[in-house]
Amino acid sequence: MIKSTLKYGVIVTVALVASGCATISNGTKQKVAITTSTGEQVVATIGSKKVTLPATVDLSRKKGAEIKVLHADNACYKDTSLNIAGKNKMSGWFWGNIIGVSGSTLGSSTDASSGGMWAYTNPNFTVPVQKIEGCKIESTPMAPTKDSSTKQDSK
Image (cartoon, one colour):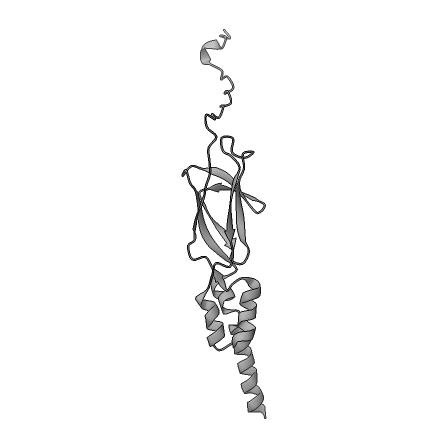
């Protein structure tokens, strides 16, 4: 009786530890590289964060993200956005739950709900930015500096 209980206890523990294998191995976010079509630096909004592109950022594997380049943040650029859809491709780790020790239900449902079962097949994205024709950024005049020749001699 004790051996049988111990045996089932070990099986349940292994199943719980191994469940969510893709979530544990992959995480719920993936690093992706985001550049612009011009190759120039711009400020973009991803969710509620401002990021200077090009950049490498962590995106949700499940939800994806919308990358916005706004004229308000970039004087000589038109508003544009790029929608990156999540749930791009199933991760190989997810299939390990279906075939593996933990059984299909516990591990795969953990991976599905967390987003760990997904992966971006191509983690490189380009935001199609468009410059405003003839736009020139006016530079702010520098404050005058004190020149040593304008100092009065205190003798």
